[in-house]
Image (cartoon, rainbow, N blue to C red; front, side):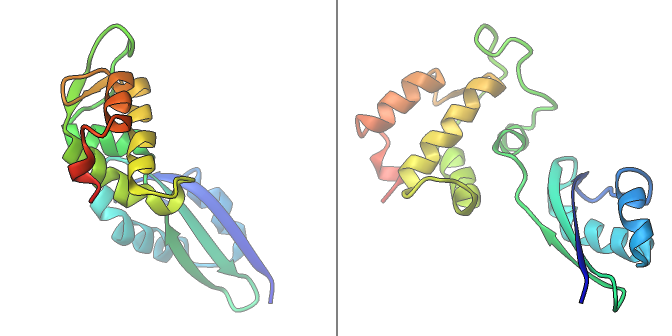
Length: 159
């Protein structure tokens, strides 16, 4: 029972048999097009975002399964705001403004993959990502927003 695991980042709904997927999976003896179709089906909800995908190939039986991870928080923030990219100068230029409601939504999606124990802590991690994307939270800089979360200003979102 030899098992090979291939981990890659693909664009949601747009995986192809070309690199990086084809060269990694081709030698393992499974039908690449079936793998691509399954990946595209499972990642269509994340269209346009980079999505971590794990392809587990059972080489002796020539079977496979696909596990789809959750896109990075930065990609989810940009999707929620409809941004192509974040700010080129995150600390100087603001790319957008996100609501705490959307922060909590992203935190709930990512919570299992985070080190945070509570939703409030997970939300603070997402707010921290807003720094590098160049996005303000409820009109405040991310650092101010984190202080506001600590002060209990947004507690209604975490109950």
